[in-house]
Image (cartoon, rainbow, N blue to C red; front, side):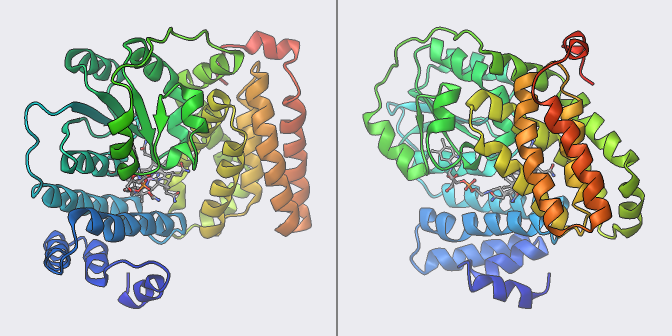
Length: 389
Ligand code: B12
């Protein structure tokens, strides 16, 4: 990316220019030189992370969303930022052996390890001993680790809304041990409601907030019982179990769509390679909306997908098509279909707002199909229960 573009972005985000350029170039040595300079200027590790590393990472996310950065570029830059956070953390005093131990991990299947690493380093800096598990932990292994270590608290980070749908069991398992579970990360939204719905003890907006909370949080929580699954939980569990097939059905349907050949011809930036990840994220958002009972998740998912497609110059009729295909794959799951129908109505609205009349008509018909099927399962739907697509 040319430096000029970056400077424009800097007017809104204060990220050290040399550090940012190092991330753009994938240059680990230059990034360390920039961070050394920031440190020598008197900034603490926490300030450098909060004021430069985190805003740079968020900017990378916006550039990916805008179709300007590839996933590979995102990976390379994030690996550099992770190295920087490790390096800054190496200056913390080692915690003494009588200090409480906390366990920090990403949620299951969550690859965004950097936020969890930042939380870990903040806790080490505050004097805690930290067992840091990183990204995508195996949930059974994780529970074993918790049982073995009996930490003061278990802290989870979730960046993806689409990670939330599969976590209730994990939270409940730790809850039955009587250990506090603290969660944070962008996937949980901007208050504690999603965390509470999943059964976490507390939600924190920032690492500093978690450090503060740990001072007052009871050492042991009341041992919870495994809660009885609700109908929404059961539908979400089915979706998670068949997530790959459902996402595959949506992708296959989009590839067959009439509009797709035009997209294929027009797609210069290869956004199609991202399709499977996008569909998987949508399906995950649906199960997250069900287990948390948070309808705003579907609104967020719709506007996120719209941003991705518009930035890649994709016909928004495919947006309607995506929700319609998702609804089709959910036969026998009325709550899930109702949630999809609400997202589909947003999609239909955005298409009729800006697409040409022919395309809009086709999209509207498809959406109607999705909406009407959201009203409840037919006999055929009942037969299809537990049959993914
Ligand atoms: C790097 C990155 C990746 C890398 C991750 C590599 C790695 N080693 O971490 C890769 C390429 C693998 C990736 C993949 C995907 N990503 Co990504 N990714 C990012 C990116 C650009 C940066 C993540 C990061 O480091 N953030 C910086 C952190 C430090 O900031 P933070 O989350 O705000 O964390 C702070 C607080 O929330 C808090 N906090 C966080 N956790 C916790 C926990 C506790 C206990 C506490 C107290 C506090 C706390 O403290 C932190 C420090 O201040 C974000 C953009 C973004 N805005 O974050 C997208 C982003 C998270 N990704 C996104 C998506 C959609 C995906 C994919 C689904 C896309 C795809 N291609 O398929 C996949 C999913 C992979 C998976 N299963 O996890 C979306 C999520 C949208 C949503 N609403 O859910 C984002 C927001 C990008 C976007 N703008 O759309 N991604």
